[in-house]
Structures are given as structure tokens and as C-alpha cells.
Image 1 (cartoon, rainbow, N blue to C red):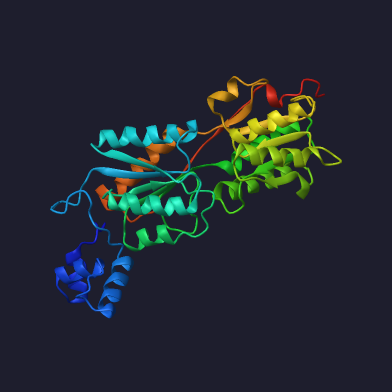
Image 2 (tube, rainbow, N blue to C red):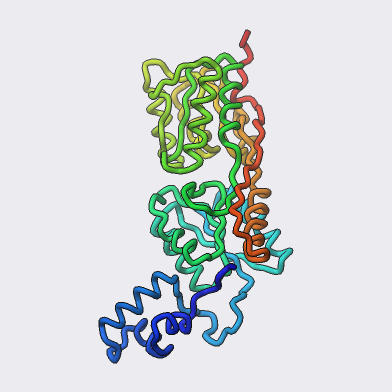
Amino acid sequence: MVKRHVSLKDLAVELGVSVSTVSRALKNHPDISHQLTDKIQKIAIERNYTPNPLAMGLLKAQTKMIGVIIPDIVTHFFASVISGIESVAKEKGYFIVISSSNESFEKEKESVDNLLKSRVEGIIACISQETNDISHFQRLINNEFPLVFFDRICEVLSVPSVTVNGFEAVKSIIHHFKDNGCKRIAYISGPSHLSISKNRKEGYLEGLNECGLEFNPDLLVECNLSAADASLATKQLLSLDKKPDAIFGINDTIAFAAMKVIKKHGLKIPEDIALVGFTDEFHSTVVEPTLTSVTHPTFLMGREAARLFFNIIEKESTYHEKVILPTELIIRDSSVKRNVL
């Protein structure tokens, strides 16, 4: 059964004290001993207690609000996912409350706390690139608080999630490069601990193996998912004695940054270096040359994440469903070498 928010009464019953004693201890009232105050505050943290800032007299736990945590609020990728979540929420008579972590672990923890204070009924989240410690999410799980992950997920947690089949997608990219005569295929990845980085790296290595191409560690570089860091990663690749003849970016932002650096070095795309991205945002069709990219079903990802959320709160589901969505490689000018025999 899905638990609702822990109340002062719940804490009081567990501790064998009055509600007023718990309330005063949480406010560090001098009439409550330090020993009892510490005990009460420790239990409150363990039970995920947060005060209700909306209405202290609220009797129902339902607020019809879903918290959504995203790494940034400006990219088309996350805007599309949000639209998908919101479309299902609206059908159910719910609203969403959006919080951006700005790719910060500390801001992500703060977002969780703020959403709990706002009395959301659950959280749908994509973790930040800085997130290694997952205790703030584990705390929610321990208290059976509805939680769903999408795209970047915590693989060690038993939580419903929605991702894409990045492994197969990247394998298709490597085969496409090989078909176009590329032999030194580079991959600009994200932080190694992220699930999307791990998944796509596995696809990269398996793709090389299937194509009979030897893995060269110099051709696998990481960046922090920013355009500036992707530019540095591209410069690192172009400084090699034997430059890559193809580059795959973990997302389109990385690929766009790489495209800019390649052009600045006087190299032609795709004649000198073929280029492929991942997400297939609108800009892929307006850059020169147009960017080959993997479609990422972002709107559907949002709808699926919302579906999993309502499965939890409506059906009291204990099954941690893992949804893996398919992708498609959209071939454009940036990766097709015309003179391949």
C-alpha cells in the first residue's frame, strides 16, 4: 500500500509523546530536553516528515500535484518530456510542479525537499550529471513515496523507469559509419557514472566489435554535457596524430559543438569527419550540413513516465516496470560520404 506523508500524529504515536511535544521539539523549543529533541528530530528525518506549508488544516493527503525534476529547463528535450507528462496529468485531473536541478547534485536534493514541502503526491525525475549519492531518492523509497525515473536513471534502485534503447541505437550508428568507410570512430560521452553514458558506451564497444574495428581508448573522451566542454573534447580528438574520421556525440548539443570546432579547424563534414548526434532536435535540420541523429521519443517518454506514476498511486503497484522505448537513426548529410566504394 502506498504511504502518504508522515504527520505529527504519526511521529507522536511512534515516540509515545504528545503531538504538541513533537511540534515543539521540531522547532527546538527550550521546554523540550535536548535529548528528546534530538530523538524526535532524528525520527522525523528517518520517516521523511516535512511540515505542510499549504494548509495546516488540510485533511486529505491528495493535492493533485506531481513533482517533476529535470536537469535543465531550456532544452527542447526536457520541454518535450514535460509536455508528455503534463498531457497525461491533465487527463487525470492533476497538475505538475517543475523544478530544475541545473545539473547540480545539491540543487537536486533541494528540489526534492521543496517538492515534498509543496505536498506533491509523487516525483518524476531525471537525475543531474553530478548525482553519485542517491540517498535523497533512497529516503523516498524507504517511505514508499511514489517515484519514477526517466532517461538518466539510478540503476541500483528498484524504481519504475523509462529509457530508450541506447545500446542498439549506438550500434546502428557504428554500422552506419562503417558503411560509409569510417574506421577511426570517436565517441564523445558524458560523465561515466550516468546510466546513458554506460549504456551508449556498451553500444559503441559492441558496434566496433561487430564491425571488426579495434577499440582505441584515445577515441573515447568524456565531457560534462556542456557545449564548452564538448568543444574541448573535440579539440582533444583533433589533436591526435591520427585524427578520427567519424565522431558520435552522446547528444545533439555535443554534436553541434563538435561541428563548430571541426569547421574551425578547416575540416569538412562529412568528407574529412562524419558526424552523428543523439536526440534529433529541431536544429538538426537547419545546421549545415544537416545532422544525422537518433530520434529520441521524448513526448512518449513523458507520457510513459506519467503512466507509471499513476500505476503506482491508482493501482498501488509494487511491480517496478522498466520501459525501454525504441529509437531510429535519421540519416542526413553530416554522415554520408559520397565517394565510398
